[in-house]
Length: 335
Ligand code: SF4
Ligand code: MG
Image (tube, rainbow, N blue to C red; front, side, top):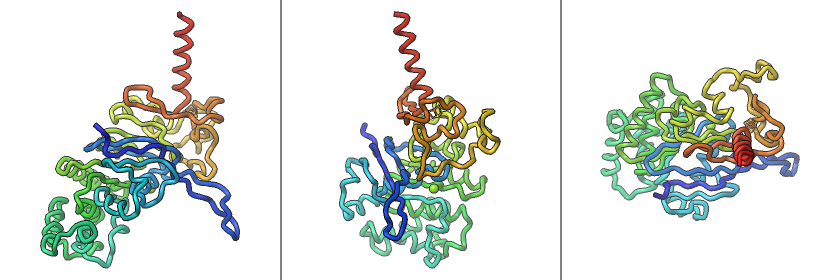
């Protein structure tokens, strides 16, 4: 089966400008050559620290930001070659849910008006049909239809995220890109919203890209997970394989959530929550080498490519390339 979404060699580089005439002096490679697919009905988690390019990836997929290069195929269409008008039509099939539902809901509009808006843009339902649909979807996300008359500030964070989800569902989308949808919520509320999203996925056969900054949140909701670091996917695997057998040192550190044990690193650097390098001046070779306890000479010179090491489990790290090389040498030696 062809995947619902197929992304090939996607790049988004932002120019860094300086001086009176805005001369371009460099680029921030926010998304730097990523390739992945998402099958219909599955959830792909995308995880990384802030600044790793995960939100930019979401926006580029919807072409809210134009990609620098690469190909995005969605539902049989090549999005990267559509006109703005054609792209506008595709957007009813791809919707976003944002981290801060309060910021994404117009405070001066009632919930009814907020939910009706996508129907006005993307459908030709009449007034009565729109109202019915708004009420139905309020109920579907666990709110009461009378809430349509209220304003965003009258709701709790969890309720607002339910409204954000309802809004995303109004156009019957196929794909929902959820950018840290529960990061701003209390832990107890997070589970409720995650459960709701899983129920909705089954009910409406939704495909999710679920962006998060920690691996814990996406663990139960994701079928596969991609780990990003400074604009690149460094590991991509089924959830089962990734959590049982994390291969990339960065993924291992994220999962252990404890300092990387290396006597050569100062205490501050040991903590994985520490600063990631400036994306405008990323380290040479493997971008993780400044924080990696297993760094080898090659790591500062050559960027490792994402390669499949286990079934459906890919990693970009020289440790494993060497492993393969050594295996080959051993094999040759024994022949
Ligand atoms: Fe560490 Fe080298 Fe692997 Fe990068 S390529 S993660 S620096 S071992
Ligand atoms: Mg973000």
